[in-house]
Length: 340
Image 1 (cartoon, helix red, strand yellow):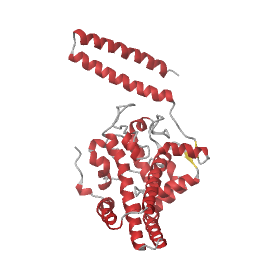
Image 2 (tube, one colour; image 1 turned 120 degrees about the vertical axis):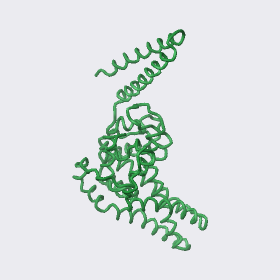
Image 3 (spheres, one colour; image 1 turned 60 degrees about the vertical axis):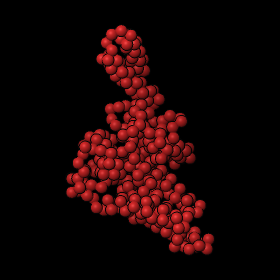
Protein backbone atom coordinates (compact mmCIF):
# COMPACT_ATOMS: atom_id res chain seq x y z
CA UNK A 1 0.00 0.00 0.00
CA UNK A 2 1.26 3.46 -0.93
CA UNK A 3 2.31 5.61 2.06
CA UNK A 4 0.35 8.86 2.13
CA UNK A 5 2.87 11.78 2.08
CA UNK A 6 1.44 13.89 4.91
CA UNK A 7 4.52 16.13 4.74
CA UNK A 8 3.36 17.38 1.33
CA UNK A 9 -0.21 18.52 1.98
CA UNK A 10 -1.63 20.80 -0.69
CA UNK A 11 -3.30 23.17 1.76
CA UNK A 12 -5.27 25.28 -0.72
CA UNK A 13 -6.82 22.32 -2.56
CA UNK A 14 -7.30 20.32 0.64
CA UNK A 15 -9.03 23.21 2.39
CA UNK A 16 -11.41 23.71 -0.54
CA UNK A 17 -12.28 20.02 -0.99
CA UNK A 18 -12.74 19.35 2.72
CA UNK A 19 -14.46 22.67 3.39
CA UNK A 20 -17.05 22.31 0.62
CA UNK A 21 -17.75 18.71 1.67
CA UNK A 22 -18.36 19.78 5.29
CA UNK A 23 -20.62 22.65 4.21
CA UNK A 24 -22.61 20.28 1.99
CA UNK A 25 -22.91 17.61 4.69
CA UNK A 26 -23.76 19.99 7.55
CA UNK A 27 -25.04 23.25 6.11
CA UNK A 28 -27.39 21.88 3.45
CA UNK A 29 -29.38 19.60 5.83
CA UNK A 30 -29.74 22.47 8.32
CA UNK A 31 -30.98 24.78 5.57
CA UNK A 32 -33.44 22.19 4.24
CA UNK A 33 -34.75 21.49 7.74
CA UNK A 34 -35.39 25.18 8.40
CA UNK A 35 -36.51 26.44 5.00
CA UNK A 36 -37.20 23.43 2.78
CA UNK A 37 -36.69 23.59 -0.99
CA UNK A 38 -38.97 24.88 -3.75
CA UNK A 39 -39.04 23.96 -7.40
CA UNK A 40 -36.84 26.92 -8.38
CA UNK A 41 -34.00 25.89 -6.07
CA UNK A 42 -34.32 22.28 -7.21
CA UNK A 43 -34.38 23.38 -10.86
CA UNK A 44 -31.20 25.42 -10.38
CA UNK A 45 -29.49 22.44 -8.76
CA UNK A 46 -30.55 20.12 -11.60
CA UNK A 47 -29.45 22.57 -14.29
CA UNK A 48 -26.08 23.25 -12.67
CA UNK A 49 -25.36 19.55 -12.05
CA UNK A 50 -26.23 18.70 -15.66
CA UNK A 51 -24.32 21.66 -17.15
CA UNK A 52 -21.26 21.06 -14.97
CA UNK A 53 -21.08 17.30 -15.47
CA UNK A 54 -21.74 17.50 -19.22
CA UNK A 55 -19.06 20.17 -19.54
CA UNK A 56 -16.56 17.82 -17.89
CA UNK A 57 -17.59 14.74 -19.88
CA UNK A 58 -18.28 16.32 -23.27
CA UNK A 59 -15.79 19.20 -23.04
CA UNK A 60 -12.87 18.57 -20.71
CA UNK A 61 -12.80 14.82 -21.39
CA UNK A 62 -13.93 13.84 -24.86
CA UNK A 63 -13.38 17.10 -26.75
CA UNK A 64 -10.22 18.57 -25.26
CA UNK A 65 -8.41 15.61 -23.67
CA UNK A 66 -9.04 13.02 -26.37
CA UNK A 67 -9.90 15.15 -29.42
CA UNK A 68 -12.68 12.66 -30.21
CA UNK A 69 -14.64 15.30 -32.16
CA UNK A 70 -14.44 18.93 -33.22
CA UNK A 71 -16.73 21.62 -31.84
CA UNK A 72 -17.84 25.09 -32.81
CA UNK A 73 -17.37 28.16 -30.60
CA UNK A 74 -20.70 27.95 -28.66
CA UNK A 75 -20.00 24.37 -27.53
CA UNK A 76 -16.41 25.12 -26.57
CA UNK A 77 -17.38 28.26 -24.69
CA UNK A 78 -20.23 26.57 -22.79
CA UNK A 79 -18.13 23.59 -21.72
CA UNK A 80 -15.19 25.76 -20.66
CA UNK A 81 -17.37 28.09 -18.60
CA UNK A 82 -19.40 25.41 -16.84
CA UNK A 83 -16.38 23.11 -16.65
CA UNK A 84 -14.73 25.82 -14.56
CA UNK A 85 -17.76 25.66 -12.25
CA UNK A 86 -16.76 22.12 -11.27
CA UNK A 87 -13.63 23.53 -9.61
CA UNK A 88 -11.57 20.65 -11.05
CA UNK A 89 -8.87 23.03 -12.27
CA UNK A 90 -8.53 24.46 -15.77
CA UNK A 91 -9.19 22.43 -18.89
CA UNK A 92 -5.48 22.63 -19.73
CA UNK A 93 -4.44 21.15 -16.37
CA UNK A 94 -7.25 18.57 -16.43
CA UNK A 95 -6.36 17.36 -19.93
CA UNK A 96 -2.66 17.14 -19.08
CA UNK A 97 -3.36 14.95 -16.03
CA UNK A 98 -5.82 12.80 -17.95
CA UNK A 99 -3.54 12.21 -20.92
CA UNK A 100 -0.77 11.22 -18.50
CA UNK A 101 -3.21 8.83 -16.80
CA UNK A 102 -3.91 7.04 -20.09
CA UNK A 103 -0.25 6.86 -21.07
CA UNK A 104 0.92 5.49 -17.71
CA UNK A 105 -2.22 3.80 -16.34
CA UNK A 106 -1.55 1.71 -13.20
CA UNK A 107 2.06 2.88 -13.03
CA UNK A 108 3.88 5.43 -10.92
CA UNK A 109 3.59 8.28 -13.44
CA UNK A 110 -0.19 7.88 -13.53
CA UNK A 111 -1.46 10.88 -11.50
CA UNK A 112 -4.30 8.86 -9.97
CA UNK A 113 -2.63 5.46 -9.97
CA UNK A 114 -5.03 2.91 -8.43
CA UNK A 115 -2.11 0.70 -7.35
CA UNK A 116 -1.40 3.34 -4.68
CA UNK A 117 -4.78 2.65 -3.13
CA UNK A 118 -8.44 3.60 -3.52
CA UNK A 119 -8.07 6.78 -1.44
CA UNK A 120 -5.11 8.00 -3.47
CA UNK A 121 -6.88 7.42 -6.80
CA UNK A 122 -10.08 9.05 -5.56
CA UNK A 123 -8.85 12.23 -3.88
CA UNK A 124 -5.42 11.71 -2.29
CA UNK A 125 -3.56 12.71 -5.45
CA UNK A 126 -5.24 16.13 -5.16
CA UNK A 127 -4.68 16.59 -1.43
CA UNK A 128 -0.93 16.00 -1.58
CA UNK A 129 1.57 17.75 -3.85
CA UNK A 130 3.75 15.70 -6.12
CA UNK A 131 7.45 16.41 -5.76
CA UNK A 132 8.47 17.53 -8.28
CA UNK A 133 5.32 18.55 -10.16
CA UNK A 134 5.08 16.73 -13.52
CA UNK A 135 5.65 19.01 -16.54
CA UNK A 136 2.63 19.98 -18.65
CA UNK A 137 4.44 18.90 -21.81
CA UNK A 138 1.60 16.92 -23.37
CA UNK A 139 -0.91 19.68 -24.16
CA UNK A 140 0.95 21.71 -26.81
CA UNK A 141 -2.10 21.45 -29.07
CA UNK A 142 -4.39 22.97 -26.43
CA UNK A 143 -1.96 25.80 -25.74
CA UNK A 144 -2.65 27.01 -29.28
CA UNK A 145 -6.36 27.38 -28.50
CA UNK A 146 -6.98 30.97 -27.33
CA UNK A 147 -10.26 30.04 -25.65
CA UNK A 148 -8.60 27.25 -23.63
CA UNK A 149 -5.83 29.62 -22.55
CA UNK A 150 -8.36 32.30 -21.60
CA UNK A 151 -10.14 29.79 -19.37
CA UNK A 152 -6.81 28.61 -17.95
CA UNK A 153 -5.99 32.19 -16.90
CA UNK A 154 -9.37 33.04 -15.35
CA UNK A 155 -10.69 29.60 -14.37
CA UNK A 156 -11.13 30.37 -10.66
CA UNK A 157 -12.89 33.67 -11.29
CA UNK A 158 -15.20 32.01 -13.81
CA UNK A 159 -16.00 29.24 -11.35
CA UNK A 160 -16.59 31.70 -8.52
CA UNK A 161 -18.87 34.05 -10.46
CA UNK A 162 -20.81 31.56 -12.60
CA UNK A 163 -20.78 28.67 -10.15
CA UNK A 164 -21.40 30.42 -6.82
CA UNK A 165 -22.32 34.10 -7.20
CA UNK A 166 -24.93 33.69 -9.95
CA UNK A 167 -26.89 30.89 -8.17
CA UNK A 168 -26.92 33.04 -5.03
CA UNK A 169 -28.11 36.09 -6.99
CA UNK A 170 -30.81 34.06 -8.74
CA UNK A 171 -32.03 32.71 -5.40
CA UNK A 172 -32.12 36.25 -4.04
CA UNK A 173 -34.06 37.51 -7.05
CA UNK A 174 -36.54 34.63 -7.03
CA UNK A 175 -37.44 35.07 -3.38
CA UNK A 176 -37.77 38.82 -3.86
CA UNK A 177 -40.16 38.28 -6.74
CA UNK A 178 -42.18 35.78 -4.67
CA UNK A 179 -42.29 38.19 -1.69
CA UNK A 180 -40.15 35.92 0.47
CA UNK A 181 -36.96 36.65 2.38
CA UNK A 182 -34.39 37.30 -0.40
CA UNK A 183 -31.37 36.44 1.78
CA UNK A 184 -32.84 33.01 2.48
CA UNK A 185 -33.10 32.50 -1.27
CA UNK A 186 -29.52 33.66 -1.75
CA UNK A 187 -28.29 31.26 0.93
CA UNK A 188 -30.23 28.41 -0.67
CA UNK A 189 -28.75 29.15 -4.10
CA UNK A 190 -25.25 29.26 -2.62
CA UNK A 191 -25.65 26.03 -0.63
CA UNK A 192 -27.70 23.87 -3.02
CA UNK A 193 -26.94 24.89 -6.62
CA UNK A 194 -23.50 26.10 -5.55
CA UNK A 195 -21.65 24.11 -2.89
CA UNK A 196 -23.69 20.87 -2.84
CA UNK A 197 -23.61 20.69 -6.64
CA UNK A 198 -19.82 21.16 -6.66
CA UNK A 199 -19.33 18.31 -4.17
CA UNK A 200 -21.65 15.98 -6.12
CA UNK A 201 -19.99 16.74 -9.48
CA UNK A 202 -16.46 16.40 -8.11
CA UNK A 203 -16.94 13.08 -6.36
CA UNK A 204 -18.80 11.58 -9.30
CA UNK A 205 -15.74 12.47 -11.40
CA UNK A 206 -13.36 11.14 -8.74
CA UNK A 207 -15.22 7.82 -8.61
CA UNK A 208 -14.28 7.19 -12.24
CA UNK A 209 -10.63 7.32 -11.16
CA UNK A 210 -11.14 5.13 -8.10
CA UNK A 211 -14.25 2.92 -8.27
CA UNK A 212 -14.05 2.31 -12.03
CA UNK A 213 -10.52 1.00 -11.53
CA UNK A 214 -11.64 -1.31 -8.72
CA UNK A 215 -15.14 -2.72 -9.29
CA UNK A 216 -16.89 -3.76 -12.50
CA UNK A 217 -16.56 -5.82 -15.66
CA UNK A 218 -13.63 -6.01 -18.07
CA UNK A 219 -15.15 -7.20 -21.35
CA UNK A 220 -12.50 -5.65 -23.62
CA UNK A 221 -9.19 -6.08 -21.79
CA UNK A 222 -7.63 -7.11 -18.49
CA UNK A 223 -4.26 -5.58 -19.36
CA UNK A 224 -5.17 -2.59 -17.18
CA UNK A 225 -7.37 -1.99 -14.15
CA UNK A 226 -10.13 0.03 -15.86
CA UNK A 227 -13.62 -1.48 -15.50
CA UNK A 228 -17.13 -0.92 -16.82
CA UNK A 229 -19.81 0.12 -14.33
CA UNK A 230 -23.40 0.79 -15.43
CA UNK A 231 -24.11 2.44 -12.07
CA UNK A 232 -21.28 4.95 -12.50
CA UNK A 233 -22.32 5.51 -16.12
CA UNK A 234 -25.73 6.62 -14.83
CA UNK A 235 -24.15 8.96 -12.26
CA UNK A 236 -21.57 10.46 -14.64
CA UNK A 237 -23.53 10.96 -17.87
CA UNK A 238 -21.98 7.91 -19.55
CA UNK A 239 -18.41 7.88 -18.26
CA UNK A 240 -18.74 4.60 -16.37
CA UNK A 241 -17.86 2.34 -19.31
CA UNK A 242 -14.23 2.78 -18.43
CA UNK A 243 -12.82 -0.53 -19.67
CA UNK A 244 -14.04 0.31 -23.16
CA UNK A 245 -12.73 3.84 -22.88
CA UNK A 246 -9.21 2.73 -21.97
CA UNK A 247 -9.12 0.39 -24.95
CA UNK A 248 -10.54 2.93 -27.39
CA UNK A 249 -9.86 6.32 -25.84
CA UNK A 250 -10.39 8.39 -29.01
CA UNK A 251 -13.93 7.13 -29.61
CA UNK A 252 -16.48 9.87 -28.88
CA UNK A 253 -18.66 7.17 -27.31
CA UNK A 254 -18.12 5.44 -23.99
CA UNK A 255 -21.34 3.45 -23.92
CA UNK A 256 -20.84 1.79 -27.26
CA UNK A 257 -23.76 -0.64 -27.04
CA UNK A 258 -27.20 0.73 -28.04
CA UNK A 259 -28.67 -0.02 -24.59
CA UNK A 260 -25.86 1.56 -22.58
CA UNK A 261 -26.54 4.86 -20.80
CA UNK A 262 -24.38 7.57 -22.37
CA UNK A 263 -26.08 11.01 -22.54
CA UNK A 264 -22.73 12.59 -23.42
CA UNK A 265 -22.57 10.48 -26.59
CA UNK A 266 -26.15 11.36 -27.50
CA UNK A 267 -25.47 15.06 -26.90
CA UNK A 268 -22.38 15.08 -29.13
CA UNK A 269 -24.28 13.22 -31.87
CA UNK A 270 -27.28 15.56 -31.62
CA UNK A 271 -25.04 18.64 -31.79
CA UNK A 272 -23.46 17.21 -34.94
CA UNK A 273 -26.89 17.13 -36.60
CA UNK A 274 -27.31 20.88 -36.09
CA UNK A 275 -23.76 21.72 -37.17
CA UNK A 276 -22.22 22.48 -33.78
CA UNK A 277 -19.91 19.43 -33.71
CA UNK A 278 -18.20 17.48 -36.48
CA UNK A 279 -15.53 14.87 -37.13
CA UNK A 280 -16.94 12.40 -34.61
CA UNK A 281 -14.36 9.63 -34.21
CA UNK A 282 -15.59 6.08 -33.65
CA UNK A 283 -13.97 2.65 -33.58
CA UNK A 284 -15.23 0.18 -36.23
CA UNK A 285 -17.59 -2.49 -34.90
CA UNK A 286 -15.26 -5.22 -36.18
CA UNK A 287 -12.38 -3.92 -34.05
CA UNK A 288 -14.60 -3.82 -30.96
CA UNK A 289 -15.74 -7.39 -31.64
CA UNK A 290 -12.13 -8.52 -32.03
CA UNK A 291 -11.26 -7.04 -28.64
CA UNK A 292 -14.21 -8.84 -27.02
CA UNK A 293 -13.27 -12.12 -28.72
CA UNK A 294 -9.64 -11.80 -27.65
CA UNK A 295 -10.72 -11.34 -24.04
CA UNK A 296 -13.12 -14.30 -24.22
CA UNK A 297 -10.32 -16.41 -25.68
CA UNK A 298 -7.91 -15.38 -22.93
CA UNK A 299 -10.43 -16.27 -20.21
CA UNK A 300 -11.23 -19.59 -21.86
CA UNK A 301 -7.56 -20.51 -22.05
CA UNK A 302 -7.14 -19.61 -18.38
CA UNK A 303 -10.09 -21.86 -17.41
CA UNK A 304 -8.71 -24.64 -19.60
CA UNK A 305 -5.34 -24.51 -17.84
CA UNK A 306 -7.01 -24.55 -14.42
CA UNK A 307 -9.17 -27.55 -15.37
CA UNK A 308 -6.18 -29.54 -16.57
CA UNK A 309 -4.22 -28.77 -13.42
CA UNK A 310 -7.10 -29.78 -11.14
CA UNK A 311 -8.27 -32.90 -12.97
CA UNK A 312 -5.67 -34.38 -15.33
CA UNK A 313 -7.60 -37.64 -15.94
CA UNK A 314 -11.04 -39.01 -16.75
CA UNK A 315 -14.21 -37.05 -17.53
CA UNK A 316 -12.76 -33.68 -16.60
CA UNK A 317 -9.87 -34.30 -18.98
CA UNK A 318 -12.32 -34.98 -21.83
CA UNK A 319 -14.22 -31.81 -20.92
CA UNK A 320 -10.98 -29.90 -20.95
CA UNK A 321 -10.10 -31.30 -24.36
CA UNK A 322 -13.51 -30.24 -25.68
CA UNK A 323 -13.03 -26.75 -24.29
CA UNK A 324 -9.58 -26.67 -25.87
CA UNK A 325 -11.13 -27.47 -29.26
CA UNK A 326 -13.63 -24.63 -28.83
CA UNK A 327 -10.81 -22.26 -27.95
CA UNK A 328 -8.85 -23.30 -31.03
CA UNK A 329 -11.87 -22.71 -33.27
CA UNK A 330 -12.42 -19.32 -31.68
CA UNK A 331 -8.77 -18.50 -32.28
CA UNK A 332 -9.04 -19.45 -35.94
CA UNK A 333 -12.14 -17.30 -36.40
CA UNK A 334 -10.45 -14.47 -34.55
CA UNK A 335 -7.47 -14.47 -36.92
CA UNK A 336 -9.78 -14.62 -39.93
CA UNK A 337 -11.64 -11.54 -38.75
CA UNK A 338 -8.37 -9.81 -37.94
CA UNK A 339 -7.28 -9.93 -41.60
CA UNK A 340 -7.90 -6.69 -43.55
